[in-house]
Image (cartoon, rainbow, N blue to C red):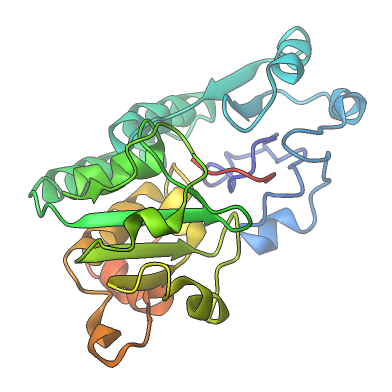
Length: 270
């Protein structure tokens, strides 16, 4: 059972099945649509979870509440994770592989992340700003998984405050060569928001991206590292000369799949 909001950890072992997910677990659709839902990450139905008698529950320290963890951990085996950087993910995947009796797939993805980490060590010093909310504007600060994802790829976060602070975009109006990264979750940034953002940060390069590739850790860390590297290298911003946004939501699929083929909120991000 997974009650954080990311996708299932990998293929099910023979004879096992997912008991339930939160309503925020949406990938892969063919797996989650037929599995019971047990509330939200911050509002799980504990009695319903208990009635399913799960053999193992996956939780996340940031997404799930401490009191819910304590209640469940007193009754069932619970795996609690919270990778704070891409480098934290391979050990977590290997642990999940052990718990699910899937060492092969776990090692495949852990090794793939290790390779990407090695490829992403060049320092570009490109400056970036990742927005996660609107009304008020909130951004990815330091001491977060996404900050570290871009830092590994050589990025320089213009937000120096820890976690996810509210920000005044006018403070960054004079920033040049700034990549303004706009994920489609937790806030669903779209092209229509650019008219609002351009006057605030007129010298930035806005880039629309898939939030799940950028903010979900686990098997998607490979995609996240490639996406961060593509953004910071300018591979997602060819349209900036004409003033139009470059959506990396499609292009990143080609960029991020070129080296590896095959398988394997609640308001907030990672």
